[in-house]
Length: 280
Length: 269
Image (cartoon, rainbow over all chains, first blue to last red):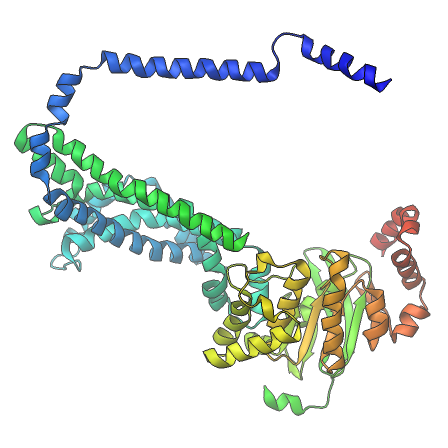
């Protein structure tokens, strides 16, 4: 009985029009065609010779080396790393204040986050570059431009990282704090030894994002007024572009940014996979 | 801390304990004494307040009213160093709560190093000894996630023991385990009981309570209903509520019919 039933029913199910599988491959095929057509249309429409003239002059590109790496990229990394470290420390402090049981701490942290998350990084750089020397005449920020850049980037990054840290800390199960407290850890020690290391694993991806954002925001250092030796990639590229009246340096500078961000993505994905292995 | 050990009083003493969460009064006046070396099992239906009582003993929950003494020290005294007091009180949780980012050995050594300031060698020694006691020496370098629930719980017990506690609190230590893994954990607890550890155990394991406990406390609706030897409380319960609870526990198939009414009775109290 059931032997006769099955073919009949499956025939009925198959009858009407395209199957789901066929519909799916049809719609995917259309997507591919549209995509390829768009790319080809742009490629055909663009004037490649003029683009090449303006952006890909081999001679000009070659003259940028090694300075673009040893000076500009080095400075970019230096600004970013020092700003990121400052942002990590300040962001963690603000996050802990935000989670504090002391109400004024929470308020201060909230106000800080709202202000520095809401302002364009550009304005903060101008503020550090102009307002601080006006307000405190005669005082030098330690490290000169490097110190100022670290502070400006750190202030921007800390507002975002504070929220990231807070989310990460709250994502650690409550039982972890209880276990630590029941073993005699003080709240601060439990936070440092048990909770924050676990929170770090959780927030590794958004942490990388923030690093990349700061890496790009480091181009704003030019607003602080930099010497030739203090130039980072964007300023270095723009300066050369204006002296050579050609945009090749901009393209090279852009590639140098990618030179750092793309491998960084790979490394972090590896770290994530490893951390996952240990926990899961 | 050490002079308090000379006191002859009970190891754990709870006086007039009340605990509310908002409007919900979970504990309504608990008085309980547990002597040194005694094993006390706390049983009762869910929502009876037994876990809250246990968590009040090491002040993971702050009592609303009343006093808690452990080893002669009043933990509810606002000036007491609660972190120091907790060092003498081991706690084992239903969900194990091992630190997932640390290996088994690190789970045992980190608290000793950070809290007791033991040096690396003596922390490692205590860790190895206690892992051996729970039969998990071969898992020393594993991460908690690679262990079974029963193994994780035994590591959690070893972690608490490595701190050298005077008292051990167990909060439904086998409730999250697959049935076939319960036995290993209970065996470790039985060993501890035989060694004379003072233990307060919130549990649904009646066989364990009957065989290992010196006393069984039955709680319902935030109060202690019965308190006596296992033979008295489990074998010959005096109160209707105790009998009802035990009959449902021993024959779950019977329980469904009565579920509705008993819940309403519980809420009405």
